[in-house]
Image 1: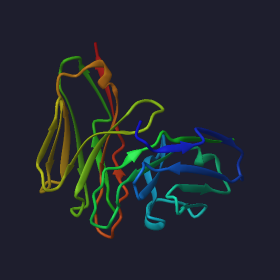
Image 2 (image 1 turned 45 degrees about the vertical axis):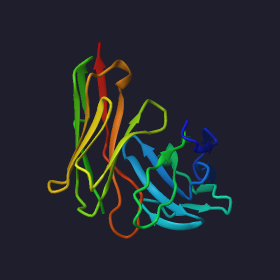
Image 3 (image 1 turned 135 degrees about the vertical axis):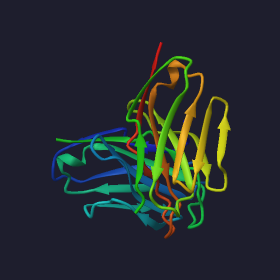
Length: 116
Length: 114
């Protein structure tokens, strides 16, 4: 158990809908990262938040957004869902995530999203 | 942006033998190289990592080597056991701009034959 929690474990929804995935980082960690894992794209970095502020963006679609709250938990919002958005979504956390940091990232158990 | 290539995609070894997985990266500014093990449907678990000021790191049966000049790094698993069977991912991060997101290779499916 990494100490990172994610809810829900599974999510089944229809095309065009909107969903919210939730992540709680390890106690004391300030940085949260979101990753998408699919068979064709592999593991891809989406976005990073550090202490409530967006720090870095990866391959995140405009239909997707995220935020980190004062208690440091984070939510990933996926809207106008398409079949191709079906994937495992992982959250990871690290202590700092400062620009010069190379912190170890610990992954949560993931949320499996199925879009029908 | 960073690009990480990983080889081979599948590796089958006899139990007790050694396994080697190799990765190359493109961004010379990258300075952190972790390796994750992932079992089917589970989260990636960090097994070892190396930073650019170190050339080699060992942890029991697992070792990682880094060649910054050639921009490649490798995972070595000795005395393989059935529980080593999983998908292994290399990754790189720390390149300029303050982005700490990991760029992953495509993964290596390691199969340990009894």
